[in-house]
Image 1 (cartoon, rainbow, N blue to C red):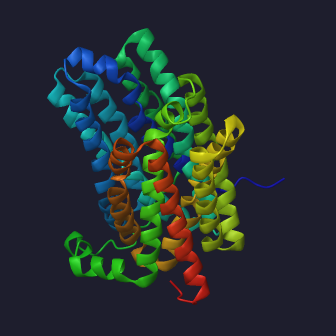
Image 2 (image 1 turned 90 degrees about the vertical axis):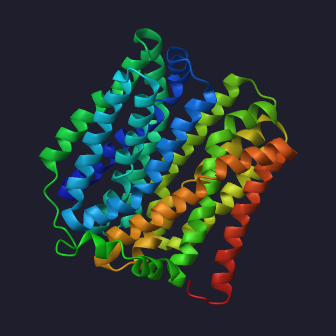
Length: 391
């Protein structure tokens, strides 16, 4: 039998930590109606709070890498776990809406500290980085599946405040386990000042490297499509495919299941056959899935389309190691955090733009637009191979 090694412990606990930080972010949405009723605010105003949370999540990616380089990844992940638990309690006890908003933004900021440093930590101790990242990413997928169910039940039974506190219920044990079983990690740049790590010229130099710029383009496209699909897939299935809300919800769950299962396999494929082949293959399958959803006849076509789209959106398991491969060992924390902030924030426009296209031209056009973006990224990979551009 294979011996359980320390690096498997780290991977398991990083995956658990990602589960907690994602759980906290998705725990608010299922109880939005109760929140709006208690505070007497509109859905649009709640939307501003949630947008602030996701924006803070994206912005904290880069500082997390800098902090990881200065103080070690373990400390930053513990702050992310403990901060997520504390912020969820602050949200739950907020007496007025303004405090609710501030606590929600804090939640996004502290939850965002986790991913970049966890990824760089895993890259330090795992040879098969793609496989490790794929397993790690599954923590968020599982949270996306179970959190709405738990939160909705607790919200109906005990109220929305108790539902939000469930984040702390899962977060505190995860914090304790991580603190107990993950050893302190050595900082990469303990002597370098924070000011030097935020030097604009150095940051622009990283982003201007051809390999980084090309990978960043693909990441923005893929994440943009993920944002658009994750935001509107249930509505698309109801309004474009004319399915019932129950069928649409089932399809949405199947999308996350397919993505979660595929991520581990995609990471392993990228380790064995190359990052570009695995990523381009994912994006192509995603484009085919979107085309089947837009134009494929019958329920079977829609079901296959949802599954292919889910597999396609597991592209990060093969693409993110491409960033790490292109970054030096000493700059992985800061560099990876930087590119994460750039593409997460840029791609966050996906929901807005897809919604605008749907309003102007219909849901079929909006999802066809997403398919076209994925094909554009696949073509970019093909040109890179064809002309040996070494991007």
